[in-house]
Image (tube, rainbow, N blue to C red; front, side, top):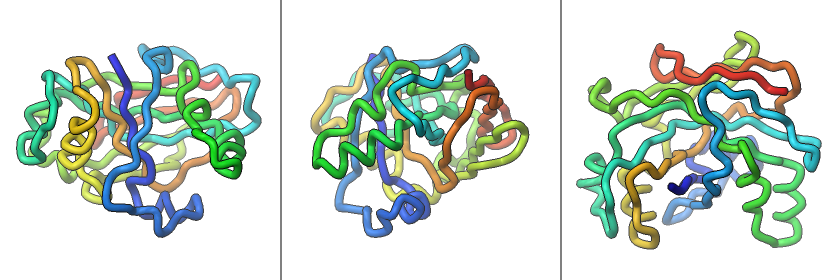
Length: 205
């Protein structure tokens, strides 16, 4: 199982990070190892190598078929469930690595950096291109996104990634975060919702 993630897929998020012109001709892709998975409501422990861990709420799709060189029009056949996830990012390390022109996988792929909620079947949703999701911290909404605002749709992403990497059953696709990212601190309670259903619920330690 692998975790495939998309960076800079919402224009307003790009603006808040100073990358207003970030949209290119193809999605920005990075990966996380399977050791990054945090599930079942387990707490996220802030690592000692960063002073600035940020939350990034995202819609997450679960791949259900083996696929290579998938055409965008067939992409819907390759995922069967959705949830809300958090792409935790060591923002201070990311800035450091970017300034040096170095790869920044370590600031994204560390242990427990990919929190995922309960998956629900895609059949519940009439229009997967118009899904709302949001994140609350201690009961206050901090992020809200809609798949209609993604710069690259799930079909675009699946088609692009599958040119390079074979998709396998159980792979996870993090589709990018909307505006509103920020730091976490010990004791906070994070809850993620897809439409009106709470799918993600855990604490920061």
